[in-house]
Amino acid sequence: MNSFAPSSRTLFLGLFAACVGLLGFGLYLQHAVGLEPCPMCIMQRYAFIAVALFALVGGLHNPGSTGTRAYSALILVAALAGAGVAARQTWIQIYPPEVAECGPDLEFMLGSFPLADALPMIFQGTGDCSKVDWSFLGLSIANWSLVMLTLIAIGAIVLIVRGKLRG
Image (cartoon, rainbow, N blue to C red; front, side, top):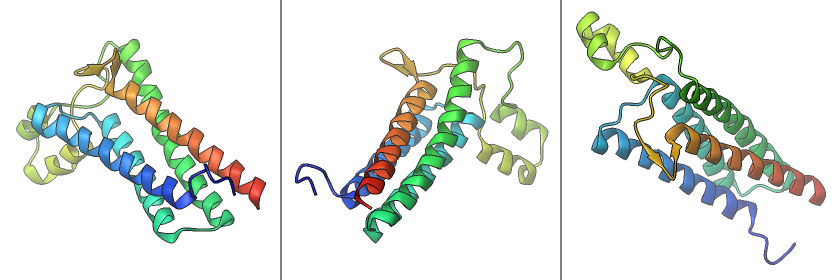
């Protein structure tokens, strides 16, 4: 084994920590800054949660070559699913539709539905998916999500290939 190459355990635990950090930043933007996530944002969060959970289990398990490939494949699927949603949201932000595609806002749901019906809708997210409320270095949250999930997918592919070369 190359002495400069980190172990799969280290990579999985590092990926877990990175995803927790990204999710924490998203929650900060939601609760401290007041940005309401849209349904597509929530779906991207689910992808990051899935990646984080697979990475945590992989890091705790410390698998061999076959296990590393299996966990990496699960991470790859979750990252690609999230990247697909982020890519669609990026498209919607660049070419916004005439009518918002993402559903009603929080005020409308609470005013129009009983609380028991509104709660599940609130969990799904509110807001307009085409609206850019925050950006950093010229990229929106959806853009950054696409970048990060794409990097995660590339990393998972590298781990799968690395595992096949060693296996």
